[in-house]
Image: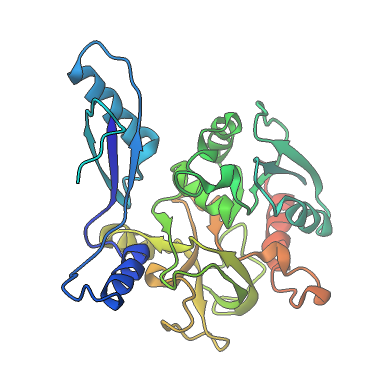
Length: 85
Length: 232
């Protein structure tokens, strides 16, 4: 499972702001905004994909994301080692 | 007064808190985070530090410690609970206090003395202070930026639950006096019934002249005074 935990829109993201400044100072002046979240990879055994997704969402609601400040997105990835470029 | 100081792996202000409670005459005991059954305590205190290395989010793992269930039960029965710094973060994560503490807007770990304005004195933790009084005590945190949506902020203000605000030495609110970007300069707040207080600044480090300030004494003295007059 791949779980993306993202700062909620509108919430100040100081890390994103710092990285934004860094990118601009390196010459990427077109950078409009940077937001930093985290990716959590979980190996999960489940009956089927729906059950797996539900379980991961329950994990997010219970502990992995803070509903006050963060949104989450859950998806199934077959190989967490994969590289997409 | 029997006070329990709850220690999590990674707590580092537990001895300061122990000493502070002892200083105002309490019988103090450490409570390990795995302990169940908190009978017989008059007040519980959650210290600062970096419980579980602040992994995931500050306080997120600590709040599922075995001891938390009993702390929540104690708070729901009206028992006074004080969370300082990481203790405040844990109380928010546990849902005993609303909102969340996120990264300081300065992007720095802020370790310095700041000033606070006392907003409410009708709480068990602040009755020995004067309303509007300015206090000086240290902060030491990277994630003390209090975050809440507009609706919650309105509710907190309407219910007079903001107990401490960051201010200048003469009690004025400003962005400069707000060390971490907290909404409404909030440095400490209570739950609805007023028996749970969370605050980022460290009153337990402002207990003796030799430490630079005695302005923190009032928090512990208030608690002792209120507990001696109220039987839980």
